[in-house]
Image: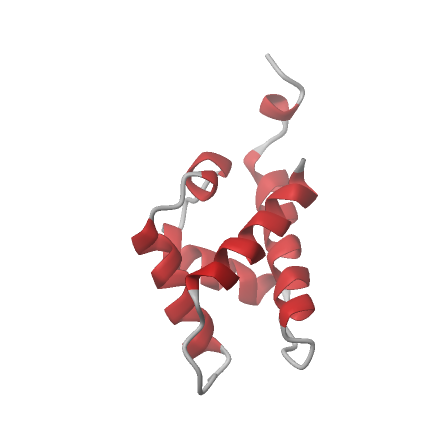
Length: 97
């Protein structure tokens, strides 16, 4: 068993939501994204009980839902490319490691 596997899911959720919020603000500094905002976006894209595995294996549909959710949540005029979402999630997962 790896050390990471023994950490409760709550630790993953806290880290990934913080990481997503930081990555969104790195992309668009004017967006005041909080961990709670990130949790809502992740839940919308992956379901309420998302895990490290589901986030790491994000399907194109899930990435698209996250992008649409991001646009709606922050009332952005432009479409958010899924490449931005991939970067945001990738940075958040790096923080988790």
